[in-house]
Amino acid sequence: MHEIKHFINGEYVASQSGHTFEDINPANGEVIAKVHEGGQVEIDAAVTAARDALGGEWGRMPVAERMALLHKVADGINARFDEFLEAECLDTGKPKSLAAHIDIPRGAANFKVFADLVKNVPCESFQMDTPDGSGALNYALRRPRGVIAVIAPWNLPLLLMTWKVGPALACGNTVVVKPSEETPHTAALLGEVMNAAGIPKGVYNVVHGFGPDSAGEYLTRHPGVNGITFTGETRTGSAIMKVASDAMLPVSLELGGKNAAVVFADADLDKAIEGTMRSAFANCGQVCLGTERVYVERPIFEAFVQRLKEGAEQLRMGWWEESGVSFGPLISHEHRDKVLSYYDKARAAGAIVVTGGGVPQMPEALASGAWVQPTIWTGLPEDSAVVREEIFGPCCHIRPFDSEEEVIRLVNDTPYGLAAALWTENLSRAHRVAPQIEVGLCWVNSWFLRDLRTPFGGSKQSGIGREGGVHGLEFYSELSNICIKL
Ligand code: NAD
Image 1: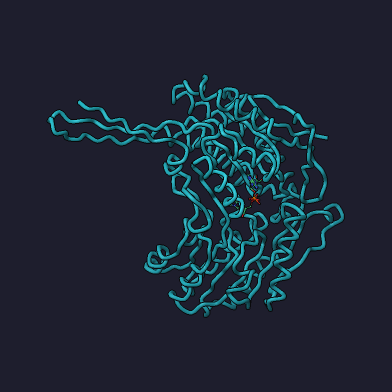
Image 2 (image 1 turned 60 degrees about the vertical axis):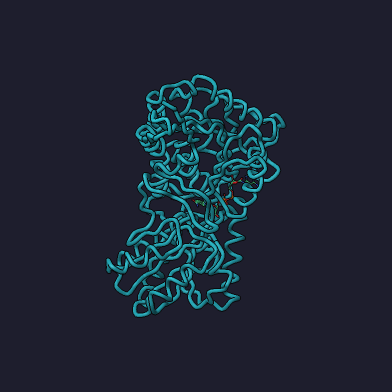
């Protein structure tokens, strides 16, 4: 049985307690690895290694050299593309076509993009007058924040972890990563790439384990940590923020959503269907930016529902390596129970089940996997749990609307504020409506189109802070002003 160990101070180490847990392939329920479960001892060792690395070669390294190393890390991931691809697909069950297009290339790109970006960021400077006439000069400097705790989810494991590790290292910090217990593989593999690229020991550390009363919580409570960046559920973000407040630690929180798509009657229907198919069903609906509420202007409502139904019924479920497979399983049976509980709630609340609503019949080899059908509902009230709460599954509710004012009110009537997609060919309407949607990211005639230089994050209960581009610098570096009296 393959073992996944912690990566601390440049070496793979077993848990001192001897505790391990199973890494399960959700497509067939098979155990693929034994994962070492970290406790306080491993977190102490990882944070100490990360602190020591700040004061060592990494801390003294010229910026150009640091950035060259990060480029080597990206090249190292790409050189072992197939290994990363297999590791990610086995952990998540997601189709190869998706991971080869999104997870692995973007996971690698995160190191290059942030290295290039940070290298070119200017700092401000001000000349000021003083009463004695000689003046003073102010200039700002960015220093690394220190040891960054990175707590990552399971839906896009490598991509979302490197989205934080990339800028953290580019800014000169060191990291201790706690990957999701569901998807430990690629974070572990990245340790080998770090060593091969020549990243000094202790700069990148990984401790496996769970959240509360395990590696995740011990990491957030560790006094040697200088900042916590987290992606995951809003409830977990709130627990982490409480812990961080005791130590006055800065947090960057990328949390849940209940994102809407709005399809106006003047939309290009082909584009809107193609985009909504992806936003509702890609990665089996396990994308934080995914659409679970669709509002369609009444004249095209029936046609839209029919075409989305046809699209959903054409998705092909199957083993990640098979060509033509476009739809994988949910991450676990536990998560499937949650998603199916919403399928039940929808029926109980009187939904019309347009398609799906249950568990598909799978071939014997995949019968023990966490499969669910892509599902579309209509006819639910806006206050039903299915329309208000994040399900994180391949499902959406579609509702007709009659005016811009009405749909803006419906879209904004949620505690979340992560993302939205508007579909319209009317340019004025796009400019008029988009700024009124209370979200961190609003797409017009697209979805998931990301320029990594732009701000990324959620408003309301979908997050705190923005990462991406220069915005991540607010979290990953400490700005100091130096004032020199002349
Ligand atoms: P989760 O909150 O259950 O777990 C995320 C990570 O936090 C895991 O590594 C887990 O072990 C750890 N954790 C749990 N409790 C902890 C605690 N008390 N202290 C420290 N660590 C703890 O989330 P998930 O189920 O892995 O991911 C799905 C969620 O993530 C969804 O809500 C989704 O919307 C959200 N998400 C948001 C974004 C975004 O950018 N806004 C991106 C992806 C996923």
